[in-house]
Each structure stands twice: as structure tokens, then as C-alpha cells.
Length: 90
Image (cartoon, rainbow, N blue to C red; front, side):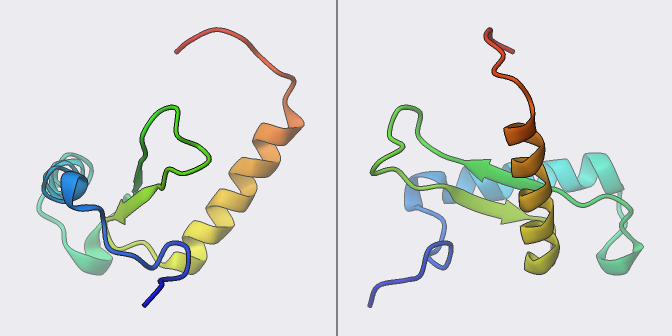
């Protein structure tokens, strides 16, 4: 069965590490708060460099609603597309 974009599970080589990173980020940002008591949401995207054509992006969050993530991504794309091209490295 072929999954729709974004529906496939996290790729095996990233799964354990992404879960550890997500748990750590949640603890740093939210302490011991759980569910609706958390104040900060996050999305972690992991992808292989240099493989845009055939690569895939793996996604994990601390419970963010996908509709909110879609809104966030649309806003980020609009912001990125509205900025002039800037060179350099972060």
C-alpha cells in the first residue's frame, strides 16, 4: 500500500533518535507538563541533505494538531518566499 505524502511512519534509521530528541525538547520547553498543560509546541523535521528529488522528510511533534502545522508551514513558506535571496550559512 502506498502512503500519501506525510502518512508514512518515520523511517527506521531516524525513529529512535527522533523520539529521544522530541522527548528531550518537550522536557526542556515544557518541564513535566503534559497535554493541554504544555505551553510550547514544536515540530521536528529531519531529511537527508542533497536528496531533494528522491529524499523524504520525517516529521515528529509533541502533539501539535496537523491543521495547526499546515497553517504554520503556509505562513513560513509565504515568509520565505517574500524575503530576498540571502547567501551564507547559519
